[in-house]
Amino acid sequence: MDVEFTGEIISWRGPPPYHFVPVPEEQSAAIEHVAPMITYGWGVIPATVRIGQTEFTTALFPNGSGGYLVPVKAAVRRAEDLELGDVVAVRLHLDV
Image 1 (cartoon, rainbow, N blue to C red):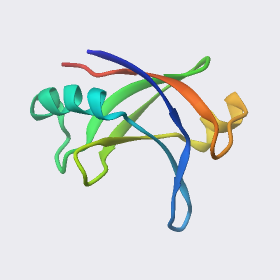
Image 2: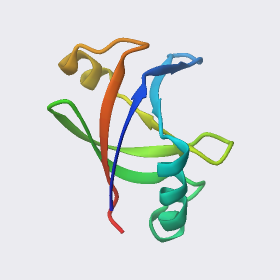
Image 3: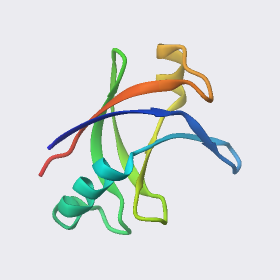
């Protein structure tokens, strides 16, 4: 299953700060539909992500209100010259 969207890089406080792109409601609903088949548990969903020219593996986190957050690793932010508040195009691949 492939999912594409654009979103703003946000910060989640904590030591160290984490950076995420929230998955929009419509795409989150589609992911929620297949989640029981692919979750690691605790609602975490394995995914291959592409932002710009950088592809990486990660796990989507449930945001507590029915949506998901895509973690954006520091190496990805450096490679793509991204900062907090930037709007990025995200492509997710979920092995369903």
